[in-house]
Image (cartoon, rainbow, N blue to C red):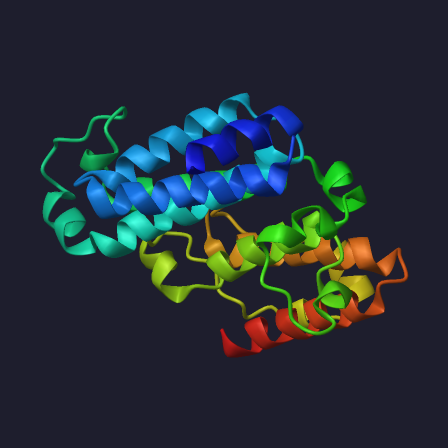
Length: 234
């Protein structure tokens, strides 16, 4: 049944149903396959490679989450193998924590790559698979909003920031509390481009800049309050 839905959705370019079918197939694999998560990641990567907009960025975002979930579910084993020297770039099961989190970051960044098209795409395209709350469209009106907030939520996860650089980025710059217009133009200094805190702030800048130039004030205020709370708590 799921395969039939998937085939029909592909034929009709029904992106929401394609994602729904892929997630159902993943859920089944996790229940029946010992290596379900790894195999699901590989299949999703192949799907994302061949997908076009607006499906590709959503699959990239899901992949970012899958890499993080794989790390979270297997962290004990991953820590045990971190320094074994058994790393193989083509075998996810040999990757250490740093590599898995770097891969998560890569896919969340890829999900926001086609920014102009994302900002022009109404989130209603994916309503069939989203959990909708009252007035939620006011706060996440476009596909860009939805994917940007997914990325930010990952970047704000303190557990995901387990890898430490010698240039650790701290949120001590008072200019980070500038009003939203000045903040979007502020050049944030960071020597560690993979810092999750830095990535969160850069994504906030893109999100706030977008809504500073439109009439989506609910989305603007929601994102800015989230930004200020994040900086204050870190």
